[in-house]
Image (cartoon, rainbow, N blue to C red; front, top):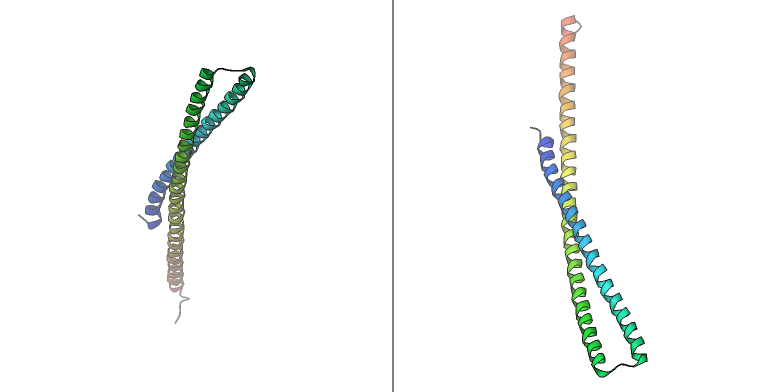
Length: 150
């Protein structure tokens, strides 16, 4: 088996690993988008809740309602903080997945270059061999015709 053929098997394996890494990157990005969307929803809900509370406050509320509001607002703030941490964690996951894919892509490209060089060398050797065979046939043919050198 020629070197270029052996390298093709290795390149195919690395290309498959690169595709898997790219799929993992896409999945990681999707998870990040979902987490960001959930964070935006929580923040939007908090703003709506504060606006409704401000409107109710204008009408007048008692102390127990104020305490319930503050307790729920604190829970919302904690949920938002937790979600922000989840988003940061998923951002790191995306960065790791992107780096893994980039490394896999670079390995595949490097191997492809090596394979291209090996194929070019094989073609050069094959061309020289064919040329030598043609020269040899021409020399033998010339001798048979009697037109060879004296």
